[in-house]
Length: 222
Image (cartoon, rainbow, N blue to C red; front, side):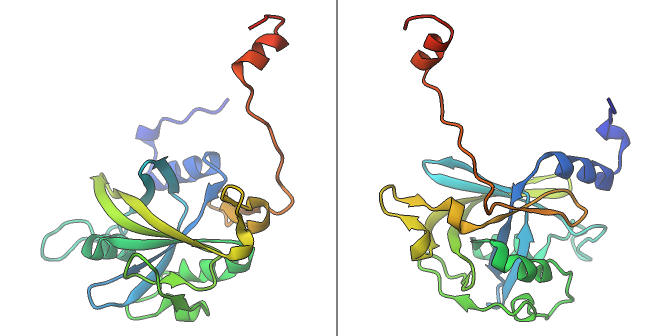
């Protein structure tokens, strides 16, 4: 079995290994807004929910590689991290199969002044609880407020509270309410070689086992 000492590897080598193992990962196509009101869109797969009371999500965003502010000398954050720090708000747009190609366009490192959403052929729609708009083509959007940003090394961990969600009507089962996840057709990020996975026709169920049932399986009466 191959063994890797992370202290002996470059950040990029560590990245290659970790993202190949922590997979599939949900993709957050994040919209944020700068101080002048310009909207930015960028995808991140270092993303997940952390808890539900309150509902907190986390985003891991690395600083720009080898870039520092010329005045302060501090590491330069990516646009999304900077915008969230300035505005304190952001929207996580869920990426489904139909949005995959546009999401990939938003990942291009465009020069300043280029509108990623326009380049990707996407439009925005007003959010209900934050000033940052959501992506109209997304099947669902989570409207978030920054709780805190933790800077560790060259990375930032952004913790956001989800204030509310917008979901297409056909994706809601009112009995829960539940999300009809098997109809959402979301995609996941795999390793760093441009690989993704579909969730269409990929669902299977493993019901949770009550302890009493587990005892019966082992021949022990509860």
